[in-house]
Image (cartoon, rainbow, N blue to C red):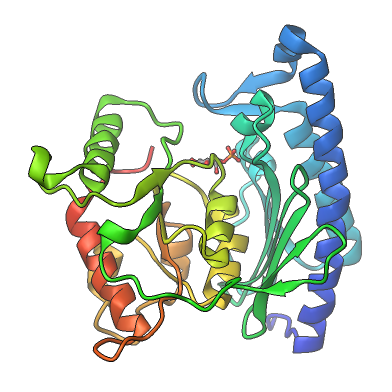
Length: 330
Ligand code: IPD
């Protein structure tokens, strides 16, 4: 059977529907946060562990996913659905050419559990195997990010009109030394991963003139605790780069579209970058990259007389990947 065709009007209406669904899901996330914080220590009983004691899930991750899945299924019954919580409980749909929603009901579950107000719902749409549309909503700040392939991306704050992303004209970025970089500890805490990450973070932040071999002394590193919000912040222009190994397609699918539509460039592992950097596939988020669990996104960079923004993105990624250590995602 031939895959469904979606017109730009279809995508526009899916985007509007998805935005209202994200606002609705946001209300449930806030309700869940109130309940968990009000329960104090007893709230811990609502918090479960997945692969280990730092990979958390709450009753609200499941409830938000059920809400979003049932509304999407009744509005778009022929679309496929990949969701973090249904995937964890064993429902694993392979990627096809069909339109497929890719949803993280609460991205930033650790923040959600701890009352750190950076958690969001992330709803992406994969169409013809490429991230095509995305909505990310942080209900704690009432920030809604949205993007659609070829149509730009926007931030809507409260009742204010949407603002096109990035929020300001992209500045040049001469070296990693001037960058604010998003990184995450993730939930894989084995020795190989944790020491590779620690060494990478130390090289990114450390002063090479004060003993840190290979140090880039970036302006700073940030860990927001949500891959989707890291992507949104790159799109907005507040983060220059975000790099993570170990997250999943539902953490990044919506963010990829939002960041790309703001001029950002997304690549996968060291290997994927090397294989594509000098080809017309550079910056194309293929199925392999989307599902590869290794992601780097860099913001849009302004042209200078000596270098286009795209050339600068490539040069900085090259430098970044010389600095950090690749590990297998667990
Ligand atoms: C996690 C967050 C976190 C990132 C992890 C993700 P979750 O998603 O995005 O920042 O470091 O890799 O799995 O578990 O909160 O949905």
